[in-house]
Length: 315
Ligand code: PMP
Image (tube, rainbow, N blue to C red; front, top):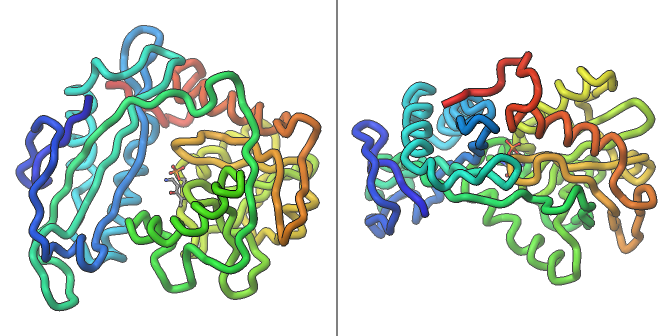
C-alpha cells in the first residue's frame, strides 16, 4: 500500500515501505529534530495525476529546517522525491471524486547525538497512503471547543513550522476534547488568551457579512497552504479578506466559521464551546460561504476548474 523513498535525500532511492532502522541516540528521537509535510495527489477524469501546490510544501520545509537547525532538500530534490513516490504508487490513487493519495515527506535528524546539539546526519523520506474524502456525503459541520489552559505554541517557539513536537503538544488537549464529544480544539494566543490561533491541524476563518477574517501569521500559527489558497479563492469570489488578530468575541459573533487544511480542505464549524457556553452557527451549521469556498477549491484541486493561478502540477 505504501512506499518510502530512500534513506537519504542526497542518494535517494525507492524502497518498499517498511520499518526503518534508526540509532537510539538519533537527534529526532532524543531532541525532537524532525519536520514533516502533508499534501495530496488527485486522479483527474482523464486518468492523469495532479498535485496541488507541491512547491509550497517544499518551501515550508526549507523554512522549517532553518528554525530546526537542519539541512533541507532543495525545492527540486523535494519535488523529485514526491513525484517519484507518487508515480511508483500510482495504482493506489483513488478514482476521481473517491479520495486522494496523501503524501507525507519527513525530514529528521537521524545521526547519533548524545549531548544536546543538532544531529550530524539527516534522513529525508516520503511515504504515501490512499485516503478517502474527508466528507463522504457532502459537507458536515465539526464542533470545536476553545482551549483556555493549554497552548500549542508560544511566541518565539516553533509553532510557525511543521515540526513534530508541536503535534505532541496538542495530544492531551485534543484527546480530552474528543472524549467529551468535540471534533477538535481551537487554541488561543498564550499572552492575552483572547486571540484565535488555530485548530490542532488546521487554520480557522471567521465570516461576518461579506468579510472573512483569519488570524495573521506571526510565528505561532502554521502558514497553511490551504489557508493561503482560500484567501485567494475568496478574494476571487468577491469577498473581502483580512489577515489580522481575531478575538474570541468576533468568533462568537460570526455568521459562519470554517477551518482549512490539506486533510479537511474546507470544513464548516457547526458550533464553538467557550468556557462552557456553546454557540451554534446557522441552522444546519454548513454556511453558504464555506460551501462556496469548498466547491471553488476542490474543483481546482481535482482539475475541474480553470487553473488560472497556476497551482496544479500535472504528472
Ligand atoms: N495548522 C496546523 C497545525 C497543521 O498541522 C496544518 C496541516 N498541515 C494546517 C494548519 C493546515 O496547513 P495546510 O493547509 O498546509 O495543510
